[in-house]
Amino acid sequence: MGHAGAAIVAALVGGGCTAAAAPVPARLAAASPECLAEMTAFMSARTGAQVTLAPASFADSDRVLLDRPVRRDAQGRPLQGRRVEPPHLFLLRMDGQRCLLVDAASREQTALQQCRCSPLAR
Image (tube, rainbow, N blue to C red; front, side):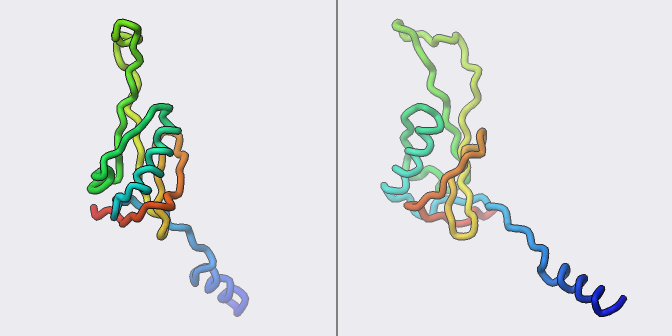
């Protein structure tokens, strides 16, 4: 192998081709009222229903499941007769230092400016 071939191999092995690290599961390091408001706004917009989160949400887990609201008639009976929609899953992720909230179904995500996250120990 000549000098030109060795230079190409060195460039490829030495970091010329690097892959971005995937976001990792995370937990909330602190759940301030501003952080909870930011998360509930995203979740409410994605589900079409008013969401209320407890301060302990995402404290020990990277996921929250929300039951979909049951639509009822004037007498209070479920309109469908039975529930067929699965719960709505949201995931908390860290991408570098950024804290991300991800809608698992659509993969839509938002960077949480008011939240502090830490990697979830598995």
